Structure formats: structure tokens, C-alpha cells
Image (cartoon, rainbow, N blue to C red; front, side):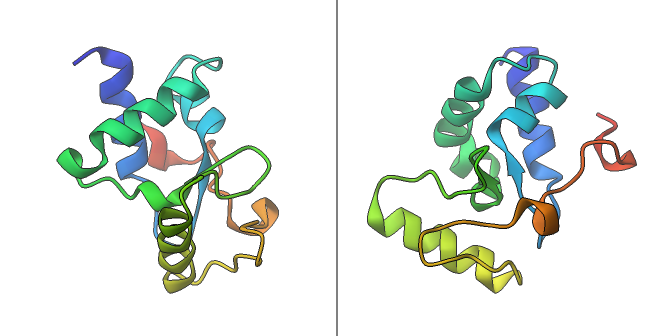
Length: 108
């Protein structure tokens, strides 16, 4: 596994319940601000193997990015179970629920 992938996995594992991060936020924190799509691929391929809280990762607009209706609903329900308000269109208020990257949590 390459170092970027390892760091991305560690970051996703540390997203606390009740908070979300964007793909771009994670890629920036992992050292490659232009690799948001790579974060999405890592999340897709490694979530089960590493038991990642995949539902806490959303797009830069504050929206659930899943295209599959069943997966979108699952993500919405998981977020709501953690106390995150999700609109009917799948939008999350980043000002309230986004995990800041300048906290001590991110020392990898």
C-alpha cells in the first residue's frame, strides 16, 4: 500500500461521529490537495477491509455524493443516527458538521 493511501485510511478512521469531512479536505490533509478523486477510490475500495466510516465523507458542496439510491439512503440514515441533519436533497451544513483540519486529531 502506498503512503498516501495509508494516510487517507488513517484520516478517515479518525473522523469523529457526528462530523463529516470532504474528499478534498482529506486529500489536502494527506499531502496531495489535488487528489480528491483518489480519496474517493480509496474509500470505495478499502471501506470494508478497514472498517472505515465511509458515511462521514461527503463532497465539497456539503452533499452526499453517492449516485446509487440505496447507498445514498444508507449514508443519510447513518449520518442522521449520529445526530447530523441531512436535508431531503442530501445536503449537510458544513459550518455546523465539518470536522476542522487544524485540530490535534490529525497528527498521523
